Image (cartoon, rainbow, N blue to C red):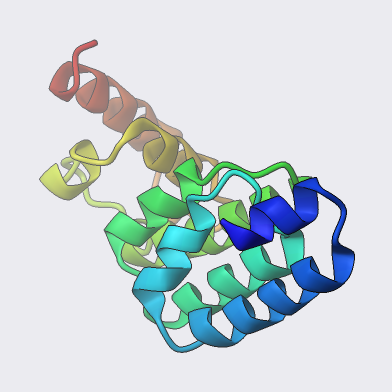
Length: 142
């Protein structure tokens, strides 16, 4: 509330103080970091602090929150995609099995797409990735 109004009505000192106070809070409170990221008018520095706060013990629901977070900054979006891609690769892409696991089939599209785009995806053949896409489409009809 106050941060958005200070920013909107050009009170830069108030906006800076609000941002600094929130940066301290999100560093210690993961739930607050998620809530702040959901704000449409979150300053870039604050959004980056939120991502940093979530990164060490990221969970799947937080990956979804990062991928869906509204942002006006390409830097924040790129940082979120990088963190999410790394997490998805570590949890799903380490050793791709012959059969597509249910956990991969249950991924939401943005996460599934990011997983498939990962440079460090470990698969024995491209056919396995193709089969995963076919299985995912069958599993999640529109």
